[in-house]
Length: 385
Figure 1: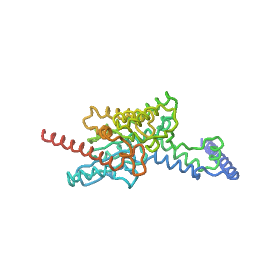
Figure 2 (figure 1 turned 120 degrees about the horizontal axis):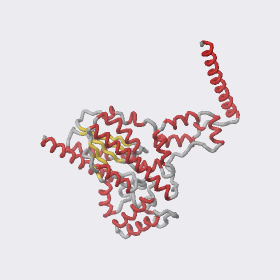
Figure 3 (figure 1 turned 135 degrees about the vertical axis):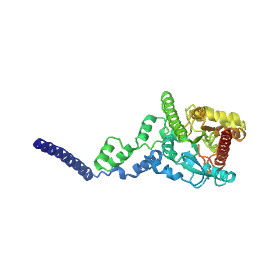
């Protein structure tokens, strides 16, 4: 028996040793051929940085740790989302979380701490993972503003694949380690499989595939946020679920280029042109409707109307969830002046969804009213008991 065990061990060592020697020979041959590891390539490193921003595996472990929301104040509010919550451009806007805390401090000195857990690039999957961790700290209120990045990160060409890779982000770490090898890097180049795809692609698939991709993204965002709502209920936390807002009339074509719109056979361009005509005639309600139609046909980087409708459905019938319908708040203002760079971006720069200081303040005001309503409900419940 001992003799057979020794032979088996020797066979294993022979296989491992010969395999190692063979790989070493391949690595040496690649070195002699002048192949450099892809892991050192600046283009690949740029892709890795982008992917880390979008799908960084484990970013929530420290960023959303319960200890990060510890405070002696009796009430804790946590805001969850991407860069629109974090406050982008960093250092150039005051995010709504800080503005909300300021309003609460004036109204209720010493009672509230507001923690901003928005993080650049992050989508609804990160929001779910973050909530799973920080709810152990038992915050009173979660503010959830998420959805834009899910449409931007997962794209419309292969959202199932990108969602799978985000769910199994360790695969990206394995890839990086493998591409330290000169031989594997050379092999990847030879077969045209050089890793890339930092996502954020803008190609539109065929109409049927496009509709299916949007359905896949919508269902995944719904599942992520539904899980956040369920987790909050079990933790005894209230949720302020916020509908999303987008720059409508200056994206994807900024106002200074309206007289020279892009050549496109996309279905979005016809309603966009109607929106331009109505906007110039100051028929703002008509313009908003047309621009929303264009946005919903071309939702790259912006959440379409169907997501806000789903958020309204998710909030309905859940006593611990209060809908903050910020889209309709902004629509009312937009009917007077249009929705564009007056609400998004900074001087000389604007984009499709990052709020400017004015919009952050409007959102903080809407959230303040919602928190005050929750206080009133709590007071009435206490009186009733």
